[in-house]
Length: 95
Image 1 (cartoon, helix red, strand yellow):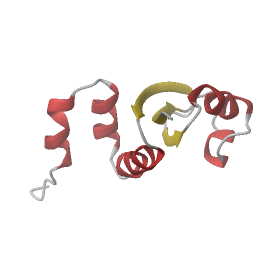
Image 2 (tube, helix red, strand yellow):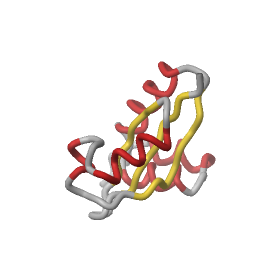
Image 3 (cartoon, helix red, strand yellow):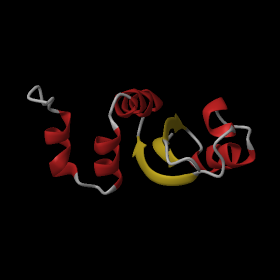
């Protein structure tokens, strides 16, 4: 069964990352306030990125990975700028 990792842009401009087996149903839940507590108070939400996985465990692992990313790296993922992702992971200690 296919599982998905997804990212929503909330009404306040923040991002929410989740995973699910039924993307359509989950989006509906977020839009109606039945989804996560975080999105309940930041509606409406917009699906800005998603990725299909063969196994739900892979979707969940990807969710946890993307949740750790900063805004710039998430924006690169949304733009599908895969080549730029490694540079955004590097820390700049010269600041």
